Image 1 (tube, rainbow, N blue to C red):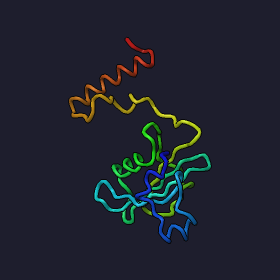
Image 2 (cartoon, rainbow, N blue to C red):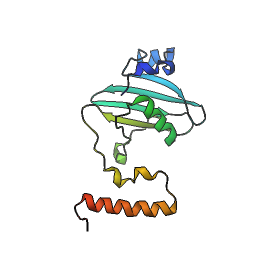
Image 3 (cartoon, rainbow, N blue to C red):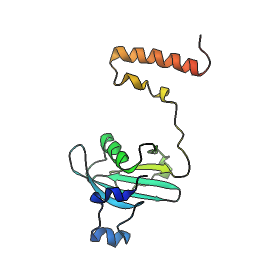
Image 4 (tube, rainbow, N blue to C red):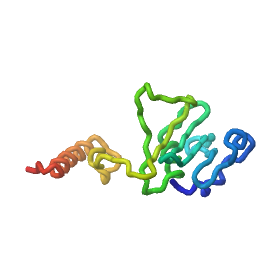
Length: 152
């Protein structure tokens, strides 16, 4: 995770934070109010690092953050070379203390396994039209077959 002191312009240090948390945070933790890149409404962010995890919770008062907002927050809180994730856990493990809160997680001491990029798409193709989607699919199939050693 980035040094959170670089985000001090967004950091909350008011009485609410002090009463609930006892401190305003440091380079590894804190509460922040960040304007949405979509509508400039405030996004509440609570970040921490401990117990083997970097964690960033992201919420709005009246709806869940959307993908552009989540991506924006991830870019502010995580270094460009770090992978962070959102998790889908079994319903029996759900914890919901805020109806519109989503979370970013990153293990501190290990890399998050990721599928090969070709399983997502062909990066050089950019956004696809129907024609380029067909070409991308053919190329992805050829590259996958080559990678698996099944090239004709």
